[in-house]
Image (cartoon, rainbow, N blue to C red):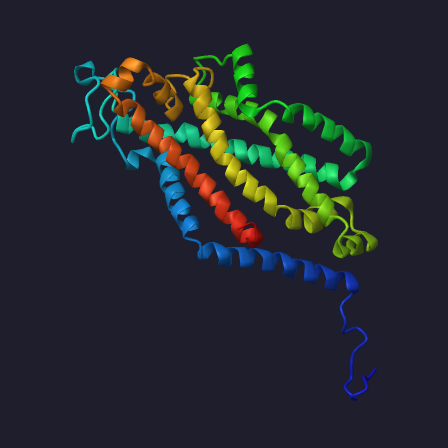
Length: 317
């Protein structure tokens, strides 16, 4: 077959419409993320937050790189000592080294935040995908269940749960952490599910989804190949912002004495131990340094989430 210009064209030279649409869809997804990365690289807020988070994650994974002092070793002879060359952040009323406890305390606090964020994204994302894609009675059921959990504030849910079912003090650290994570995921997934459901409802009517459905694509393929890649961006932003919130909730529960408990080491526990009026006046360093690290960690993840949000949707700047 020839075109009007006389150039031969094979009747098999044009790809099927479905493949062409899938190629355009993949190109659009790549363009979104490449544009987002280009915006992120230009944002100093992104690099500041990344540097802080890398340092904090290194503290959590390898605290021995920052200190060789045992955070559980107490010497009453040096109790409540102010910061000095020997004890950079001073000592506690039990003679613990505050610097060592701050470094080691990053592990529990950040681990709770990261695992909770991953858990809420997985659970909330899957429920939102199913609810938005299938609709009907299943959407109504999942939405009503989500509203029940969503109506209870996350911190209040944690307080009530741990007050009614207090954790065992003999549990190892990882079990205490997983218990806190489980409670936060249980009451934290509805907000992510609602967000994903809304994104799915926006993506589902698009032409490339309808074309894939007309070509016989199965429901799992439609969900995970065509809808999810184009609906996941808001989840990434909110999950990053929420990570700081989960760390703050864990610290609050530990401060109240109903989340992680000693002998576990976390910033919330140390802030709780240093919060009495007498200690605040006599040894303010016990309260100041854990509070600074907790605040910087929360702000770092919030800054990262803001930078990602601005990169994905510059109109929100």
